[in-house]
Image (tube, rainbow, N blue to C red):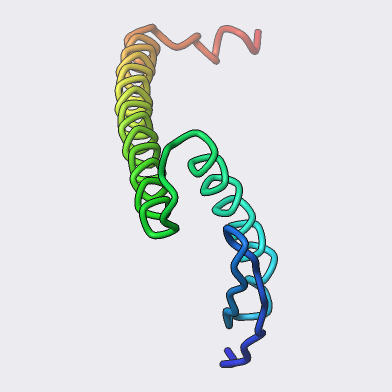
Length: 112
C-alpha cells in the first residue's frame, strides 16, 4: 500500500478548496463535493441565511438528520431480515424433523 496522494480542487458555494486524497478516491471526493455544493446552494436559496458558515451548519444538520433516518430504517430492515431468517430456519427444522419421522422405503423390496 502506498502513501501516494492526488491533489484535487473543488468549488463549494463559490469558493475553491484544495484537497489531497488517494488516487482511487478522487472520483468519490469530486462526487461528494458536488453533492455538498448542491445542498449548500439549495439551503442558501431556500433560507434567509447569508453567512457561508451558517449555511454550512444548516446543511450539516440536514445531512445528519437524513443519515439518522436512514440508520433507523437500516436497523428496522436488519431486524426484519433477522426475524424472517429465524422464522424460515424454524420452518426448515420442522420440515426436516417431519422427514426423519417418516419411514424410509424398504430397499430390499424394491429390488425384487
